[in-house]
Image (cartoon, rainbow, N blue to C red; front, side, top):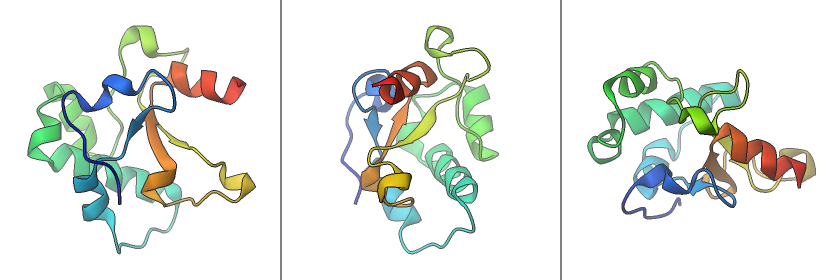
Length: 120
């Protein structure tokens, strides 16, 4: 399903569980089959890059990255070591029965927040 988003979509990526998957993007991915989570992630970022409303929130470099299937860069202060791009986080861990491709089980996180979530 995804969630309706307003304002700056990834503003919440650095807090709590992160930013939800927008409904528009979930709709674009629905019904498609993916050979791996990497393939899903690439398709996800391509769809974000192709979305006229969401892509306006990124600079040209990050739009180019998304068109190539890569996550956009997070802010310098939100990066940790070599982890410099936004990351997909499973709310319910896949190892504990969480659905891999369920967009309602996914959030977008900064690397720093993603690490903090898993530290507990």
